[in-house]
Length: 569
Image (cartoon, rainbow, N blue to C red; front, side):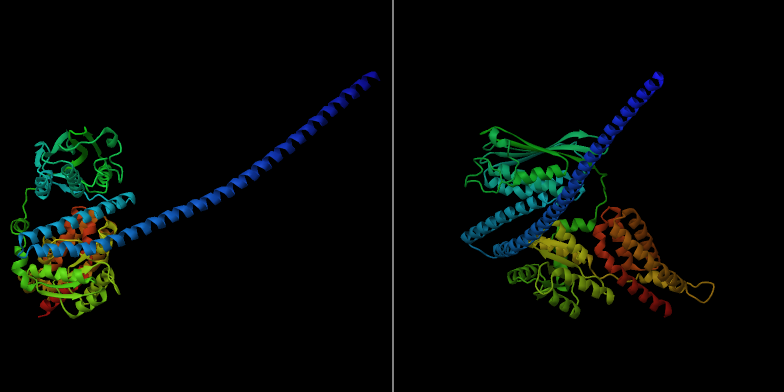
C-alpha cells in the first residue's frame, strides 16, 4: 500500500509540474503574442509613416521638377527678352560702323559695341551656369583640329590682348594628332574664358597659351592646356575658392576689373563634364598659370578636300552676292527694331526681295501666296509662334508636293532644348540673337546653296531607259517604275523609323539602298536627299537628318509623276 501511495505522490507531483509548465508556457505564449501585437502595431505605424514620407517625397520631387521647369522657362524668357534688344543694339552699331564716320563717331560706336558685348557675355555666363546646374548642358562630340582651334582663338583675341599692352604667344606640341575627337566648342569656350581672364589681370606683360601631349596611345591622347600670364597673381587663400560660382579675388572685386565671377566656375563645370581636371598655380604679384587636362580620342585624317567649301572660306560672301538677285526672303519677327535691322543687313548683302511679317499666322499666309528662297522665322511671336508656323508650312509642302523651303530659326533663347524644339518642328537651322552681318551672310550662303533648284530627273538616264523594251510591249522604264512604286513608300517609312529611333547603322543601309534605286531610274533630286540622310547616319548624327524626312514623300511623288509622263509619251 505504501508503494501505491508513493507512486500516487510521484504521479501527482509530475502532474503538478506539467501543469505548472503548461501555465508558464501559456503565459509565455501570451507575452509573445502581446509582443508580436505590439511589433505589428509598430510595423503598421511605420508603414503609415513610410507611405506618408513617400507621398511627401513624391510631392517634393514633383515640386523640384516643376521648379526646374519653371526655372528653365524663366531663363528661356529672360534670354529672349535680353538678347532681342541686344541684337538691335549690336546690329545697328555694326551697320553704323560700316558707314562713313568721323574719328570721334567711330570711337563712340566702338564704346557702344564693347559695352553691349560685355553685357552679352554676362548674360551668356548666367545662362551657361543655369544649364550646367539643371544638367541640360550636353557635349557635342566631333572633330577637333587643335591647331586650327587655337589659331582661330588667337585671331579673335589678339586685338584685345594688344589693347592691354600684352603679347600673346602660342606653343603647341607637334606630337598632338592633327585631328582629335571631342567637343571643339566647349574647348574653345574654356580657352577663350581663361585667356580673357589672364588678359584682364595683366597689363604691359604677356599671355602664353600652351598645349602639351601628356599621354599618347593608339586610340586617345591626353592633352594639357595652360594659359600663363605675368599679371597680378592670386593669393593662396583666394585660390582655394576660386572655381566656385560668383567668387572673385579681392582685387577682382574692384571696379577696375569687370565681371560676375562666373567664368572660372563655368570652365570647371565644363572640364568636369568632359571628364577632365582643372587647376591653377599662382603667386601673388608674380602671375598665374591656369591649366586643364582632357582625354581626346584620335581620328583618322581625311585628306579629301571639298573644293566648294574651300572657295567659301577664301571668298566669303561671293557666292551669295553673285546670286543675290534671285534670292527672295520671308522675314517673320514681331519686334520692329529687329525687322528693320535684319532688312538693313539683308540689303547690305545685296538681297532686296524681302517680305516682312509680324507673326506666324502672317508668315503662313505669305508662304501660301508666294515662293521664297529662304524663311527667317522668329521663335517667339504673338498670335502664332515660329514653331507652329513651321509645322503648318511643312504640312502644306507635303500636301501640295512642294520642295522644302529652308527655314532658319531666329531667337534670343539659345538653350539646347529650344534648339531641339526648332529642329523637331521642321526648321533647318538656328541663328541665335544677337548675330553679326557675317554670321547672317554665312547662314544664308549655306542654305541658299543647298536649296538651289535641282532637276527632278536626270533626263539622259531616263531617255535611255525609255528606249529599252522588255520581252513584251512594255518599256523597261514602265516596268521599273511599277516596281519602284511598290517598294519605295514602305522603305521610306522604315528609314523614317530608323532615323527617329537613332539606329544609325540601319538608317545608313536603308538610305543607301533607296539612293541606289533612285539613281538607277534617273531620279536626281530625291536621290540627293537620300544621299544627305545616308551621310548624316554614317556620321552618327541621324538627328540632323530629321528635317529632311518631310521632304522625301513630296519629292518621291513628284519623281513618280514625272517618270509616268515620260513612260506614257
